[in-house]
Length: 184
Length: 57
Image (tube, rainbow over all chains, first blue to last red; front, side, top):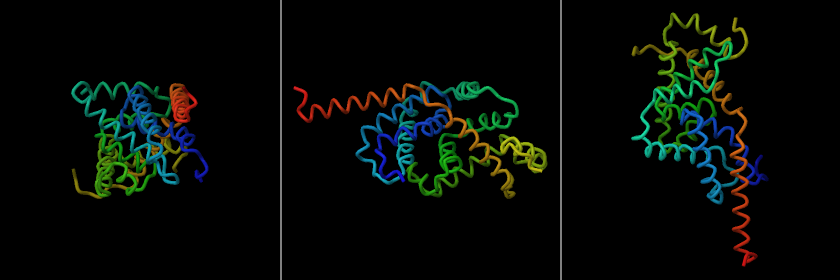
């Protein structure tokens, strides 16, 4: 489909997704946009290495996450303030009516380790196959599977969805919020 | 904690929350700094190509 598109033009189309992916890794908007900026510059100067016809988003996301991890290693000693980061990320979005579940979700999600956030977003939100996600993260398929499983399990715990009794109530209520439809 | 089988509905709920939160972030308008950055990169490239063609100097 994108065969005739110049990769330089195609790159622009992936900016919104890159920002969303960066935000899920960095957890605050300023760092996320710095991350996207670095990624764009790197991608631009390496566009000759991008194989036309392959998935550009996967290629860009790979650069982005590698940039994040090398940046994170560098900064690790200066910024070890997970609480502050989470608070900041949360205050970026005002909570609208009926968005309590999403606010809870963001809060819980921000508490996951970066590797789990990454795996869950790639597979659960972007819809990459386990195989593609594993290639992007430079790890085994089984590692991606176990990361997404652990992420879902931890989120269920944090959002108190793992309790069978709670489920009866929250299930309908949350699904109604999420789908915008009554679930009957 | 317990070894009981996870409820698939819970996973479904989590994924729906995830997609919603992610989509919300992806729907945000891209700030001007990125348009400007790409414009800059294009200009740099053009002037570089100019050098290679010998049109500069």
